[in-house]
Image 1: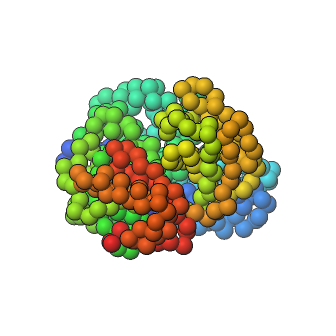
Image 2: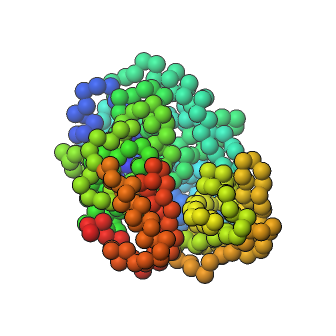
Image 3: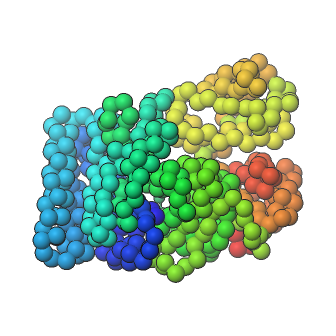
Length: 452
Ligand code: ADP
Ligand code: ASP
Ligand code: MG
C-alpha cells in the first residue's frame, strides 16, 4: 500500500490512513511519501539558502512546524509522543545544519540536494510508523541505484535481492519511506525521481510477488482526465497495463510512469484508491480488461506547453515508427514521437526547444540515418521547428472492442485536417498500440471534453 503526500498531508487524512492500514488483516507493507508539499518546500528552502536569502530560515521553520504540529495532533500525549518529538527533532536539527552550510558556502550540489529531499520521507515515515504501530524499515538500505548517463537509475537485480532478504520473514505491518534510495557504489543518498514513492511500492510488490499493489491518493482512482482540469472527469474502473502506461506517460500524474512495469511483469494488479473515500470502487489496472466502457473515449491525458519538430522528405519513405530511435544530446527531456506517412514529428517541451540547439539522431535498423541540429538539412531529411509553440500533446485511449474503428475514424478526420465533432482543431496525429490509442497535437486554447 502506498499513501501519497496529500494522504499524509493533514491531520484528517493521516488519521484516515491509520484506519485504512489498521483494517488490513494480512501482512502489509506500507510506503509513504513526504507530508504534502514538504518536498517542494525542501527544494525551495535549499535554493533560497544557496542564493544567500536569509529568509530561508522562515521556510525551514514552517517545515519544522508542520511536523511538530502533526505529531501533537495525532499521537496521544505521553512518553511515546515525547520520544517521537525527540527523534524528529534530531533529524530536523541535522537538516538545519545542512541548510546553514549551504547558506554559508552558497553552493548546492546535486548530492546535497538529494540528501535534503530525502528528509521529507524520512520524517513522514517515522511518524506514520508510530501512528500505525508498524515496524519501520529504511528503504535506503535496499533500494539501490546506479549512475547511468548522469542519472540515477534503479539497479533492479540488486534491489530485488536486497528486498527479498530484508523481508524474508515479514512482520505483520511494515512501514517504508518511499522515493529514497542509495547509490550502490558510494552509498550516497539518491532518489527515484519526483513522484517516485509509487515506484518504491511497485518495486517491493514485484520483488515479493505481492497479491496486489494499492496506490492511495486524493482522487477516486484513475479518471478519464485530470479532474483538476476537467471537472466532469469520472473514474475508469478498469484499465490495462498498456493503457495506463500510455496515459501516465502522457501526464496522468496519478501514477508515476515507471511504477507500472515491475508489477505488470509479475501480473500483479494495481488498485488506485482514494484515501478520502475508501469505500469508493477506485480503479484496477491489470493485464486483461473485462469490461469495455460504454463511452467512446476511455481516457485523455496531455502535456502542456510543447513544441513540434517535424521531419519530412523523401528520406522518410519506408521509415517506420519502430525503426526510429532518437537521441537527444543537448537537452535532457523526453521526446515523444508521432508518425504519419512520410512525416515524423517529435514533440519536446517548449522551453527546451527554445534554448540551445536540439540534436536529433535517427537510426533505422541500427544504421544512423541522420544526425541533425534542428533547422538544418541533412541528406534528404529536413528538420525544422514548427512555428507552433504552447501546444498540447494529447493522448486518447479509445474503449471497447470497436475502439479501434472509432480511433481510425478520428485518425482519418485528423489526416484530412477536419474539425472533429467535438470541435477541437487538430494538427497532427498517429495511432498506436492495437490502434486504439491516438495522439494529437492541439493548440492550447482548445478544450477536451470527454463528456461528449
Ligand atoms: P499523491 O500525492 O497521492 O502521489 P499525485 O498528486 O501524485 O498524488 O496524483 C494525484 C493527482 O493526479 C490528482 O489529484 C489529479 O489532479 C492528478 N491527475 C492527473 N491526471 C489524472 C487522471 N487521469 N486521473 C486521476 N488523477 C489525475
Ligand atoms: N515526496 C516525493 C515528491 O514529492 C515523492 C512522492 O511524493 O512520491 O516527489
Ligand atoms: Mg504521486
